[in-house]
Amino acid sequence: MNLPKSIYELEFGHGSIYGEEERNAILEVLDASAPSCGPKVKAFEEAFAKYCGAQYGLAVTSDTTGLELARIAADLKPGDEVITTPISWISTANVIHAAGAKAVFADVDPATLNLDPKSVASKITPRTKAILPVHLYGQCCDMDELNRIAQSNGSVVIEDAAHAAGAEYHGRKAGSLGDMGVFSFHQQKNMVTLGEGGMITTSNRNFYERMLSYRSLCCRTYDPKGKYLPIDESVEPMGMRYWRLEFDGIGFNFRMTDIQAAVGLVQLRKLDQLNARRAEIARRYTDSLKDIPGLKLLTEASNRKHAHHIFAVLITPGFPLSKEEFMWRMFTKKRIKVWSHYTPIHLTQIYRELGHTPGECPVAEALHEQFVSIPIHPRLTEEAIDYAIASIRELAGVAH
Ligand SMILES: *Cc1c(COP(=O)(O)O)cnc(C)c1O
Image (tube, rainbow, N blue to C red; front, side, top):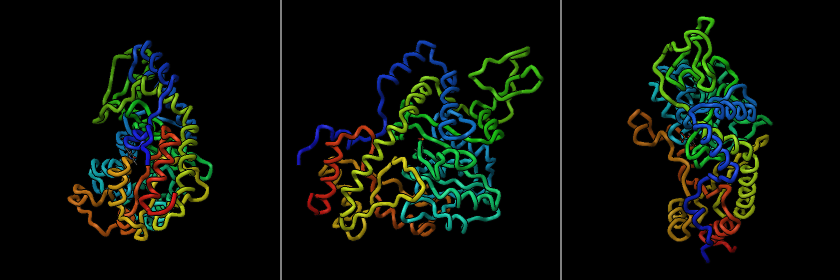
């Protein structure tokens, strides 16, 4: 089998794809002295919130820091419990434990790998303060059910929408489906802001103001009416005593720069197009892999628009190789760097030290032995996609 020239994309695949518009946007901000949190950040926040159907957007340095602000808004305290999924990037659970609260892992639906509402309901206790679903691989969770469970006990719902920019549930966008939504613009994600970046969406004014304040050290400016207001770097302070600052919490700095936001504005305009390309690649994979014995595809649930951040297949016992043999041969024989998203969080060393044990989420643990992610991102060429499909079929021992 010939190695395609675009093999590089399969080895080091990540989502970033920039063009002339981003280049020009960067230069424009550079000529405006490239501030932090200036007019471009404001414009990006407004455009992103509008796109998601949320009232407010708050640009931050990453999804991880966005989740940290969301947990501050949700007022998570030591002793509180947050129900979340073990199949996620570790940030999702870390922000819970960083607050001294406890992550309670619910199990997943084997058809989608998303949180199973029945398992979530069974893990509710009087200490449950929030539910933190992840729209895994770009497919929205069963949000009607999760919101219903949350409402029944007064929990806050925080969507980890790192995979789900542009994804929809019953015609509504991720980021508008819970009390707060948190996005990542890291280089691997569906839209990107120069390697790192994030955004929080909410329609709750109290949450927004609290997060705005904590994004920048809980710094408040003196308002002419005699009140201290959260500092908003994109607005020049006005009036007498504009130099007075007040601090009413221990905050950090999670501010996004204008250069990132200017790029984010361009990427947001391209997002539907970038996602359409991902959907096309997903369709190619689905059509070409669905007949392979022992290789199972995940289900696309009804009433969803999938953002196809990750394309995972299940290597079941009917496949001629184990998951690990398959992954290693794909890498060493085919130079395709497949991946495993993710190691269940409760099985990692630190979470075991925190008291978590195997057996907490039997479905997630069993599926961890099977799921493998095939490269999917908008830079993949047709040649690279053909090569990936042919490679998988060859290792499966079926004809091309
Ligand atoms: C990427 C990712 C994060 C972390 O995003 P950063 O922007 O890198 O902090 C959190 N949760 C999920 C599900 C992710 O995929």
